[in-house]
Each structure stands twice: as structure tokens, then as C-alpha cells.
Amino acid sequence: MDANKSLNLPFYLKATILLVGIFAFISMLYIAQDIIVPLIFSVMIAVLLHPIVNFFVRMRINRVVAIIFTLFLTILITASLAALIFRQASIFLETWPILVDNFSEMFNDFTRWGSRYFDLNQWKVNRWVKDTKSESLTMSGAELGQTMFAVGNGIMIMLLIPVYVFILLYYNKLLIEFIHRVFASNEQRRVSQIISETKTVIQRYLAGLVIEGIIVAILNIAALFALGIEYAILLGIIGALLNVIPYIGGLVAVALPMAVALATKSSGMYAFYVLGIYYIIQLIDNNLIVPLIVSSKVKINALFAIIVVFAGNALWGISGMFLSIPLLAIVKVIFDHIEPLKPWGFLLGATMPENRIIKPIIKKMKSKIK
Picture (cartoon, rainbow, N blue to C red):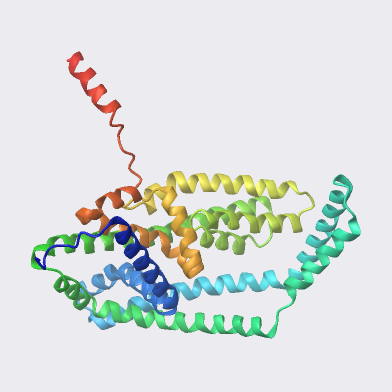
């Protein structure tokens, strides 16, 4: 038997092997998430900062100094944004008890109305609300320990990412050369195309997200100030950050200022004003900002975008929701350059196929007209 011949396995065996392989791969991603997630973030940040480092290198600045200076500027901008958010959050927390009292009073009015309208026992409703509050506010020692561990782990990861980014930027040429040497010489052109398009996708996506976030934050803050909603700066920035998470982030982003409007304004109509103006901002974002700024060469259809966002959340939490779309775009780039996987790349894309029945009829009619 020829050793080069592929085994002609039955379909059910091929499907079983494929499913077992996918399960093992996903399990590895979940188990090693503390290593993989920071590394993926570092790779994306390194790809985004690479043109800036090259700019400084072309100005005859030492590569190590250029990397350190670029990282310093990035950390300075990030720290300034974090300081602004922290300052606004501290002001928000100072008035938190007043907001809770206002919201509780409004909620009590709502439960009294609901009890009358739906013929419910108000005492039972109040008892259920009280029990729910006590359960949600009670945190066991084990939960507190888990929370503290998660916070400490997050801080450690935040400290590791700049180190990873520095190493990736410094060994950039070595890593690219390694990828080329893994593949045969007749595949080098395809490998170069995949690397180039992957870098373009990441750079356009991340740079576009930064610009989109700034524009959306300005629109949110201006809208909330115009409506007289308190904590407009904090809510506007949080809304812009949540907008990064596709589809789901926008819902949470509008829920927060609506809740604040309900708790601080005398009329509940302000919550609907917030909903309406945020809807207008989302229309501007989806139809003007995203197509002009965030769009890249790779288009992902909405079905798979929603699926991978939920899958990313199940696998890696909030980080997975953010990483899901760029990772899927990279997967599509790879699929589009490998012949057996091109149908899957087409399935992930947003290009609608032409009707195979109508198209020949139209061609025939055009030829008759001519």
C-alpha cells in the first residue's frame, strides 16, 4: 500500500475525529486562557504599534529605544484615560447612596402600581424584593477570595502585557522568518499574503476602534450634557468602551444612562430621551463611522459575528467577546487562501451569492436585446 495515499475513511469516522479534535482544541484554549488571552492581546497591540516603531527607526533612532518610547506613550495615554475614568467613578460613588434611595423609592412606586394593576399581594412582592437584595449583597468568604484572586490575576496580566509587547516587537523579524521556514518554498508567496493581510486586518480594526471610541464618547457625552443627565463624562466613556463589544455592548451602554436618568430626574421621559438619542448615535456609528473608519478588507456576516461573540464570552469572558471578531477575521483570511477551506471562508463572509437560476435568464435576455 502506498504510504502517501490518504486513508479512505468512512464519513462518520472523519466527522468523529473532527469533532474530537475541535473539542480537544477548545478545551486547551479554555484551560490555558490565562496564558493565551494576554498573549493574543499582546500580539494585536504589537501589530498595531509596529508602524509607529518603524517610523521612529526610520528617523535613525535605536530600535530598542524606539520600542520603549512607543510603549511609554501608549501606557501614558492609557493611564490618563484610566485616571479620568477613576476620577469620574469616585464622584459617582460619593453620590451612590442618594441614587440608591431614589431608585428604591421609584421601584417601590412601581411595585405598588404593579400590585394594584395585576392584583398581586404587595407584602409578598416587597418581601421578594427584600430577599433578593439581601441575597445579591451577601458575599461568602469563598466568593470574596475568588474576587480578590481575579483582581490580582488581572493586575498581573496588565503588568505582563507590556513585557510581551516589547519582546514581540523586538523579535518581530525572527518570528516572521520562523513562520516562513515552517512552510515549503512553493508556499512562501501565499504565506506572505496571509501575514500581510492579517497585519492589515488587525491594524485597521484596532486603529478604527480607537477612533470610533473617541467619536462615540464625544457624541455620548454631548448628548447626555444636552439632556442634563448627571455623570455624563463617565457614562459617555463607559458607553464608548462597551460599544467595542459587538451587538451586546450597545444594549448595556444605553441601559446605564437610562437607569441614572430614572434615578435622578423627576420625569421618566428622560430615560426615553436617552434611549432615542443613543439610538440616533448608534445609527450614525453603524452607517457612517464604522463603514468609513473601522471597516477592513475582511467582512464578517452578522450571523457568525453574533455566534462568535457569545462563544467568546463562554470561553474567555469579556476578553473573549472583544477578541472574537478580529480572531474570526484572521481565520477568514487564512481560509480564503487555502483551497479546501475557501468555501468556509465564503460562508463567514458578507458577500451574497448571485442567484444561479435568475442570472442565466438575465444573460439570455440581454443577448436577445443586443
